[in-house]
Image (cartoon, rainbow, N blue to C red; front, side, top):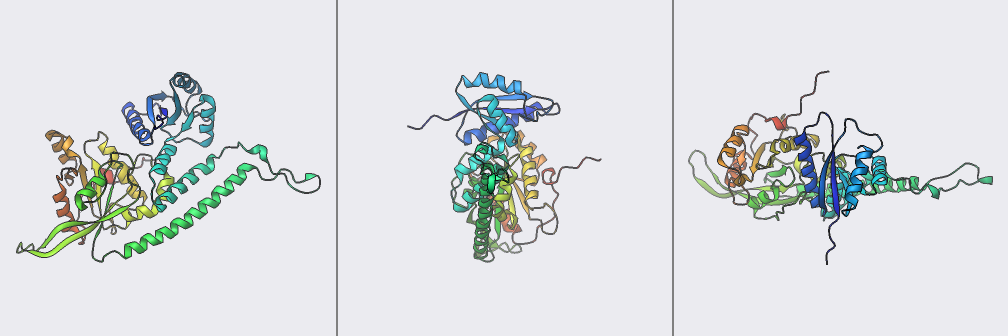
Length: 396
């Protein structure tokens, strides 16, 4: 019999300038992450505090009151929407008696559960080691290795925590070498692919329907309604239709194909350790001939999700304009969940996007047409949307 899931309490800090609706949206997404990790979400709480407490991040009194309330109800974990220092996690655990996870630690746990291939496992382990290195607890300081010499002169030698740090740094070096080798293997695989086939990468917020679109375009893929269901890049050949002469309208017998790669999804506050560790996987995005940016059209935070995608693409080296800019098509997926007025509003806000439903095939032919006309020719000029541009910097 499967053990019952661990119960958790979710908390988020709200400062004086933070909007209520945004804080609640972040907690809702944290709840989805927790469920994806196998937790049973008991409750969500917003802790209003003007300043961050240096020791516990949140207020000690607030944390104690919450712990007394939830421990009687079988809650064992406290999951925080904010990124905490190791000392803050330790202080919260001592104060509440609950196991504490911050947002980054939770996302890393999900990645560890989903990693299947050797490359994905190595990438996640590297991210975990870099995350844990500054958070090592000093619980082994009683095992000091004394220095040698007459009368033990020279004072204490290495403490156990220093040994642990050295072991983790050694493991990080090993993983980086392994990932460098696997990246070279991936590059060899790219070069071995059929020449003349353009490469397209599916990118977007996690659980927006990228794998569903891959299946609609190629007939392959296993869509799942989960955050971060895809960690390993999957590349398949897609049929785009028959070549035709635009002047005569006659088709030829030569079909047009492209390679479509499904990639890891993005999310708010994506841990920088994961972005760095998954650089070889995300290399499929940087080297693609075109990008299909997939978004959940029915999600209430659609515009925020698009800004996160735009920022992450810039972070990994995919600039929206310039001589090396890749052609992009925004695919607003799951429009079957919208009413006609909502679709018209989307058309006004994103006139160049394709409104699609990967499940029933709506809009897929329009995507194929865009790919057939654009690739491998040079990208045509287009007006960039707000989500693709960096946030304006405040004047000093």
